[in-house]
Image (cartoon, rainbow over all chains, first blue to last red; front, side, top):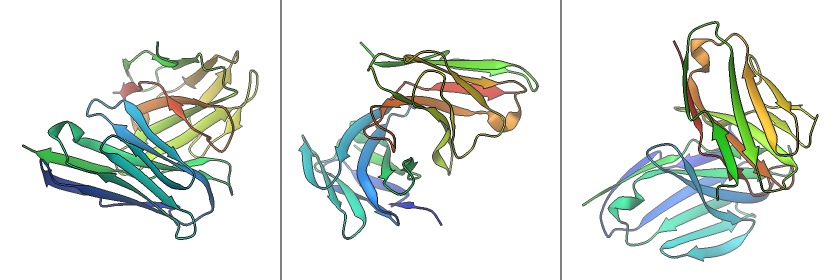
Length: 109
Length: 113
């Protein structure tokens, strides 16, 4: 089965609302990396987070290894946050990175 | 200055055509990766390498060859391109295998007619 489940698949927000994106994984991990994919396709690394909580501006990443989940919280969303968010599991079992299928976020003005 | 670059950024070829995608990294990383991204599948690993002359098979290798000529340069070769290889291709580098923190290039959009 799929090692990384990302949810929701899509999300529509009004500007100013908060968003919570989830990745659940079924294998042991070294770390979780979160990316933002621009509408044009390029990838921007947001967080590399082995465990615990990291902050960057309006973004917060939390990885809880025991619960096999990682989340990305976006506060006070802006229209420029629109795009696709990907999580990538750095697996200690396979020594490979496995990507989720992404959450497509649309923030409306 | 971008640490992982890819060329070309866009490529159109015909079925049966010969295509080479290039990737260069200036991170001094040992590991380099080629991924493809398709709707509904996320990014999938094609091939990777842990150093010049080394090649490891990824999860979706069929129809692709790769070659790592130097620590900096990693090439993906499609010798008989097929429409199923129409995709967005990404190159990445990392310091350790299993990914570590991955640094991505801007992507190459390939269309096979």
